[in-house]
Amino acid sequence: MKFFVSLIIKGTLASLFVSPLFAIDFVSIGTAGVTGIYFPTGGAICRMVNEHKKEIGIKCSVESTGGSVYNVNMINNNELDLGISQSDTAYQAYNGEGVFQDKPIKSLRSVIAIYPELLAFVVKKDANIKNIADIKGKKINIDVPGSGTRMSSDLVLQAYGIKYDDLSLVNELKSSEGPTILKDNKVDGYFFMVGHPTANIKDAANSVAIDLVAVDRAQIDAIIEAHPYYAAGVISKEFYKGVDHDTLSLGVKAVLVTSENANEEIIYNITKTILDNFEEFKGIHPAYKTITKKSLLEGLSVPQHPGAIRAFQEAGLIEEKK
Image (cartoon, rainbow, N blue to C red):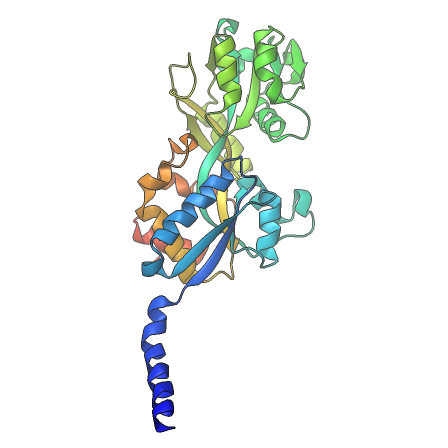
């Protein structure tokens, strides 16, 4: 009996010293469908976290979900720890707008802004459109009512003071039809908000000589001031055949979000892991080619979690308040 008791005591003492070294916190990241960019993004974050689980004590799993709105709701219901959301969805959730009308989720917090889904204005090279202001009298596809592309193209046109009546033709087809209607000369250009590079614009470039037209910085700044869930970004000249310049534009960000109730140390360690392994993170997808550590802070449409703030402060990317 004495021997049995001594084993229990020794086992208890051992657990006091050993268990903290192997204590693991399990976290889940909600993404979207497996064929999109969100799923491999969540997978890459989890892979980096899991590679360092002995140091940071976190094991991460990625889940395929219904996307932005679903992820925000599941975080609010404590069924997900983190999720990826479009910045406009996060903004609407926090402020009780759109599908979250009168149901604000004030506990929602941002971690990092990942990559931009930028508005591309694709034009035929021989259409003589060098600036957005040049589209007066042209045939332009602005996408279907209610789409993200349509909302963004409308804001851009308004920023330039351009009305539908200023165009010779206003097309309202889905952007997926853009390459075909451009090739068939039914339009001179079309708008499309998407993560880049995209097969859509590559198809257009393979069918007809195209160019991308920039949105000027003044108009971008005005739109962002009025709609803070937008962010500026650059579409690389390396993405599409025939485009010999980087193209300034704007769009929404894919943002990693969580709850204000999430453990500060866990969010700090996840954020720090991404910052410490940033070049590996950039290699996830061609859409990440133009992101920087600083751009991870651009387009955060809801307050940032204290754990994430601490990691950015330590990296010298946010100035500590005194």
